[in-house]
Image (cartoon, rainbow over all chains, first blue to last red; front, side):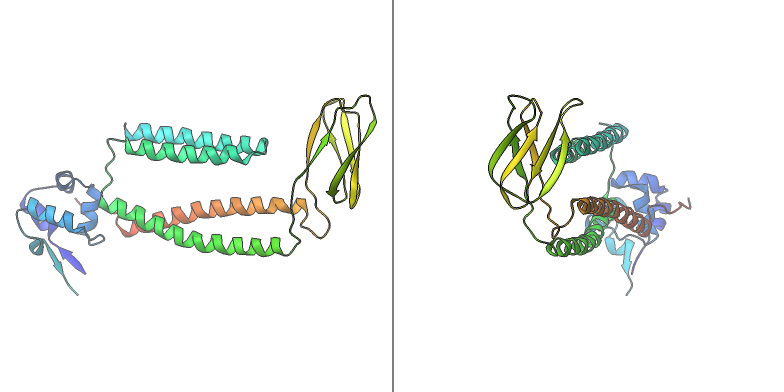
Length: 65
Length: 211
């Protein structure tokens, strides 16, 4: 199962879901679904997200078996 | 093109398709709705590419793909089973459906008897009205090599004769195949909507925002 810290990074950067969605070119519902763990983003979106927060994918996403 | 304009045009195309379907039934011409549907589908795909304010991201694409895949799987099974049963039903009777065209020449005077040769048509009796004032009565004898026509028609008429001897499926039963096809199409729509709702819910389409 994939877990993520998007909500934490959003708070650190004072971003709303809508703001992050617009920055990444996706819908707000997609950001919401990723945060809730209902949708695993593609590798491309994960990279773009990590680049946007100026960190690594491993820092944002963690895999728990 | 704005997305709202796209939806309005698609609605109009849908209405036109319904009208074409109706006209196709009225005129007994399946090509009208067949060609009309292909044209409508092409127009839909062309117009969809011209929408500028559409924001379909990877999650929505995934929902589309999974819905289409699941619908195809479910529909394939139902379509295959219904069509197999239909094939068995049709094969349970004699084959050899064919349209035999009977030409009635213009009579020189009313109630003239004509003979037409080499028409191997099974026994069938019917009366086909031509206009309000004229009608033509045709009698084709069982296993006859010559068909005899009695007519007071003033025009040449071509009639499609659908031979249906008792061992074949009755013409009145053929309508059930149309009903089955309609049911299959409606079933496909319901299956699509059901899977669409399922996958949209699964991938958080209607989740509330806690912000």
